Length: 254
Image (cartoon, rainbow, N blue to C red; front, side, top):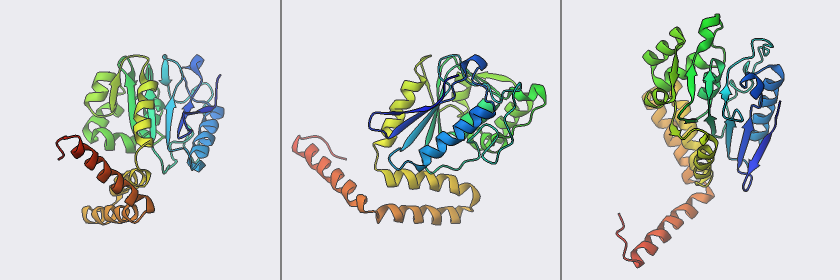
């Protein structure tokens, strides 16, 4: 078993690997605890902005809980981090099998990137195992209630093309390129003006528990925090300088 996480480039991107390829990255108690600790460290690291969760290797992202060595029912989620509410984005880099609790683990992430040969399914249905890592909550929010019911109640397998079509997978890439594609996405996010990224993300999640008017007021509150952040003026000044450079080159400025 391999374990641990690594930092990329300037340390703003953290890659967390499940690291049990011999078990299709099925998660036992030890792995669940390690994932919880690694995402806790990511949350506490002020320099780290985006995390990427990967299985490690091309064979599987995650086959869910290891039924031979079941993880404990921990407050943070049986699979480790799935009941954690992080303040920063996480991207799932999916290759191969993403089934049972693996679907729930991927649903916990903000963005899902998958190789085109990835396979999905709530296969725990076949063994009478309930979805206990947020799947019954997050799947309907991601793909809609009707599609979520189809996937959860039948436990059928579906491929990466369908996963993208129904909105579960955000981006498809060539097999073996999921991690590299996730790094590209993470780099774009991490290089963006940070207060706006954080507050827009939080506003989107918080809106689920609010009425429409309450959600608008909450969005306004987050927006004001960004506008009054000291870095906001720098961002506006940078936009203005860019517009002026484009005008000086004779570019059309819209």
